[in-house]
Length: 256
Image 1: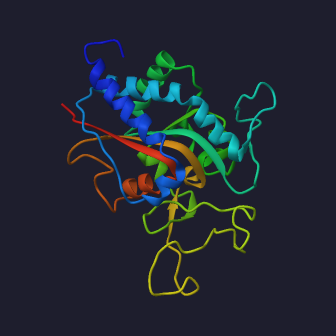
Image 2 (image 1 turned 120 degrees about the vertical axis):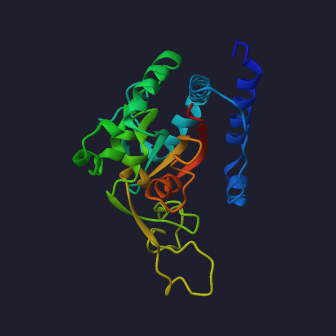
């Protein structure tokens, strides 16, 4: 970042990249622990950091998508028309970027066009009847970045089982878990005195996006009483927590 605030932006970028380089095994063993960095960044600087991150890690994100999806055989491009699930259970997405409202999306679309060459889908612009369809996941899996809103992800489109952390439980294939007769779909992930046979699986009504394994989830929110993710128990906060991803980041800004 060649600017007056280059040091600050590079610290933010390097912190994020280092977190994403943590192996999956170590990340899973330390689940429940979190790291954070507090920096004073303007909305435009946040867009710059995110755009650089998306560009520099585009290959990693696409490898994640290819691990579950069947990408186009023509030049390896990801397009909605030819993306389908390989294991017939769930699709993998690139980066899901969640903003506060539809009014914020045009600014992000401009920034991503200016700083990156990645494909972008505006999920919140889709009609509600279209978003409910199972093909929505296939469409989203064909893009590098999916832009949406908190209201869109809290839409009651599908029944999603969640674990004790409130995170969505995705189905496991027989090859990944041969001993599971139900593919892990309704297996209880909580620890307690009750047996798995007697415990009831907690489920939430959430969006189709919660049936996907995202490489990265980025949540943009406002700092203070108007924030969404800082209010546990609300529909927006539950929907944000439930998103399944390898890594996630919160960017909180102070409305002046």
